Image 1 (cartoon, rainbow, N blue to C red):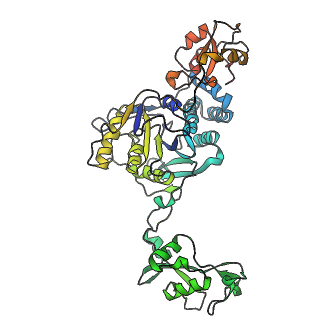
Image 2: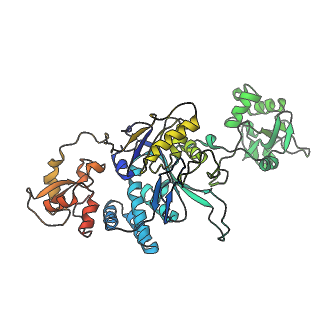
Image 3: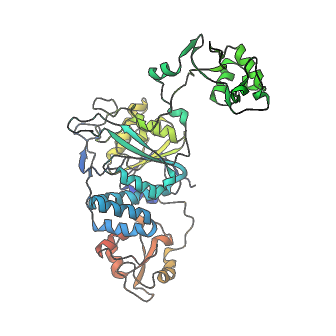
Length: 487
């Protein structure tokens, strides 16, 4: 894993594809993205709001360059290309254009994400099922963790079964902090589970036995109770959260008690065993712990969307609540980890990450984002002035994880052999000489490198036509003829 080749608390203004290409591989711990949804709408923050000036189009039309991109993707990512082709067959050219845009960026996100990292993609039913297939193809279906349903609004009366939820696709999940995202138990749950009281508080009763007969002390009768008579054995807490609570709060020294019967005696003497009036097996009193809470499922109804009167509202048209991002960040990262949002908009991810002691970086097309993150940090964190705290960049970072490379021109003989002497643009055959020029498939100004995998030979005419643009531009101008290069 490489160290990041950029500073903490950086916002890039520009196309995230080019910035992604310039980022070191495997340097990010958590990615959250809330990209366009292919909603066929245009969005703009209202005049007078904090986000005024921020706007984007979520309408997609197929171009010749999209077709060229698909050809390029198919060479290295055939499963990704198959998803895009299927989407075109079922939903048309606009969906192909949208998924092509997403695919080339997700491929780069996979490269910059650590193998232990997680990625959360926010979407809705406009393209969510296609994005699920795309994520499977890029990150691997075995890395799929869950699809979270977030209730973001109330149903609309003008439509039956009105749309009131969004979907968040989660991949990865190696790093988990369940205690950080537990939610409080509601009274209905407490009343149904914690049905007993004593001077210590509420408790439920739990088994002191486990399945199976044991030949050791755990299988021997304790007092008048024989677990073996019902095919069970004693299972008295020795490890886990509740055993630690017993040791630290209720029964100091409990964990140092070795014998099964000795632990039962200690629990009984401390009034920690519940006896039913019907003479059943003794049961353990499990008290409601001070930090008790449930782990959220994958249906989130307890986080409200940002309404027009909310203090955190900036006016940004697709703003998400800080609480939503805080849950995601706490669940899948630790303090000091690097959180990345490639479509950061009004910078909610950046603000939430900062509040939680994480490093963070973001990218957005709108320069308004830089001001928004500084203003919001000033309001949310309080006291400090955050302008100058954030690094604003519009250049492309240069990768530092590639090692020392030979001069890119030195690859010309090898490239000539791989391409069979044919121009990687028009396909015309040339003798090895000045009429074939070494070219960067992805220009260095767009995040490309000097690696041989990013090099090709073009004839003078094609190289001049391509200029300082990606290979897809040239192929579109040449009517998307097959690329001769074997990258």
